[in-house]
Length: 368
Ligand SMILES: O=P(O)(O)O[C@H]1O[C@H](CO)[C@@H](O)[C@H]1O
Ligand SMILES: O=c1cc[nH]c(=O)[nH]1
Image 1 (cartoon, rainbow, N blue to C red):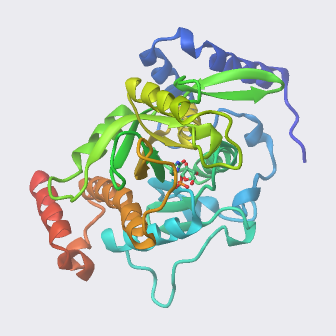
Image 2: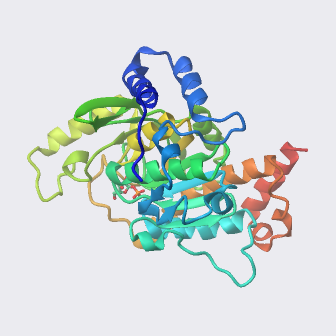
Image 3: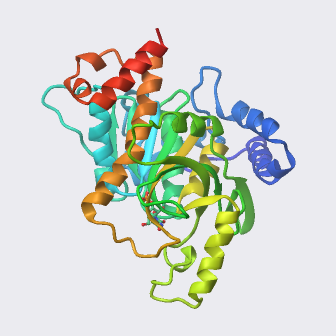
């Protein structure tokens, strides 16, 4: 049944809508406190900024092949603490297997990981205890649809203070392929720290804010033993991989190599260290929902040296594991801190890897 919206709910909607226009006038702290107030219940569970949903008999999360009536979402997802997302289904399936080993999670006997959203034929979703691993496709429209449904999923499931992390790939600016980059600020094609939406024919901007503390915490989990650099910097989010990222090798190119290099230099002068295609929408919608979020990508090339992604497949496969390793350290740290990683030492996989073992030792000492 379609929801009926009362005047007071419409007023509520308008207040929230006005807030989206107003945020640039507010200082960050007021904005953060306001967002927190309207996006959390007192027990930390996610509160939606859309009262229409409560009035609906059921909410179908169409692109996830889930629904609030057809599935017991609280039973299925109520324990989720981390929602990790990345472009491809295969990367997220690999991450699900990787994190399962890293946190010592054991599936019930006789079962194996399954793609929960397989029948959507859109996104893939795997659940490993408190960790959801979801593919988001390419570009901001694809991520936008997923984020609406993921945020509603967190609400229906009554998840407490979930953290969203994008695990991606990017082009580096002045950094070597294989470098791990944590986004400090996500900028749109015009270097604005916001995402532009067209709603009811009107243009609005929502701040593309990520959690700075989380970014620093992730950075602190990089290790001097890692055979690659992990850095923090600004990320440019574009609507295209070719002309939109100043590549000379698309089907069309109406600018010169000099124009391209001048543009990349301008980005560098503005503190931009990488280019990808989802960070502004990811940051804007998580911030609007009061959800702590981070973006961690690995550079597949240094764009100052060229445009083609030509590293060997095996090399790129190894590079793509690097953001996953960093994120898994964070997840293990939080779970250890919360006393939820009790089985770790009993789990063979953890004892086998010296680096992982060292980290576990450090963590347990830090919490003694
Ligand atoms: O590696 P993922 O997460 O797919 O992200 C990057 O790769 C895609 C382009 O190849 C874009 O979606 C870009 O953001
Ligand atoms: O150059 C690159 C590489 C990966 N992803 C992008 O969006 N750009």
